[in-house]
Image 1 (cartoon, rainbow, N blue to C red):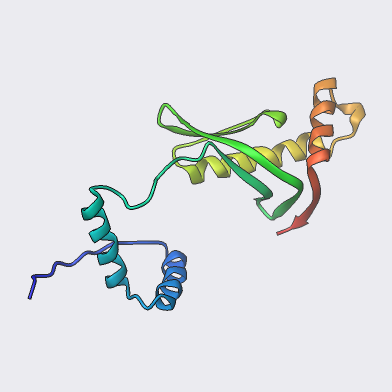
Image 2: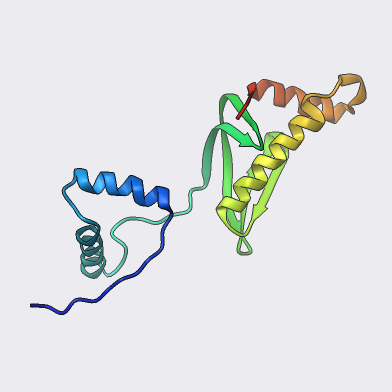
Length: 149
């Protein structure tokens, strides 16, 4: 019988729960799934699936704080890594958000979107500059409604 070795790993509790259900449906235990993955890595001399950074992500809902911005259409937000920093950009609104992780960059993007809404989207036109009125028009064309989250 082959010697065995222990692997200890930490993962998000929600991810563990979701994947457990899927693995059970496939008739696999965590040990069998991990061994399957490791055997594929050994056979392929690398990961058994492509790992890529997407060049954009789609957002149809933006949540920040206690609000949910339901959008009329999905935004295509550019994603990249520049100088080791994650960057999310949506040029039509002038949003350029950064983070040391993708999650941090997403949080910064959501915060910038909500800030633009608060400072420009809800403001009376007479108090806005011409550029701010243009930004407000773009925001209003994107946001269908704002709900309490």
